[in-house]
Amino acid sequence: MTQAQNTPAPQPTSVPQDVRAGVLAGLMPFGAGMLLTLGYAWIGVFGVVLAAIGAAGWAFWWRNKYQQWFPQQVTTGSVVGTTVVVAVITLLLFISIS
Image 1 (cartoon, rainbow, N blue to C red):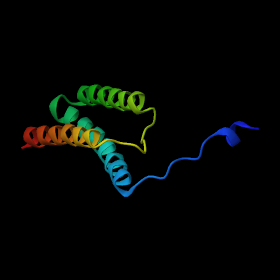
Image 2 (cartoon, rainbow, N blue to C red):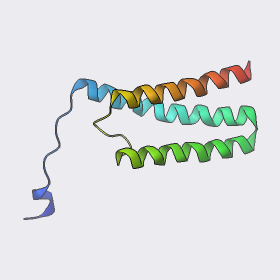
Image 3 (cartoon, rainbow, N blue to C red):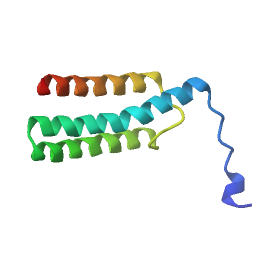
């Protein structure tokens, strides 16, 4: 028997799980882009470098936490936490450019 034959079939997901995964799939790159823009607005090119390091750290922390970039089983707390972080970054950006 090969490894592929021993691997269990993936479990089907529900619609709420898919919606949470889809929301995170949109929020993570949007948040990283807003963080880069915020870094540029505050410090300039050096701010972009710092924000890129921060965004990469955020991404790798996420990867280590869930063992996948976009896991199928995402809790509502993760979606809410990510939404709050992205909202704060966006609010700070809009405050700083106005």
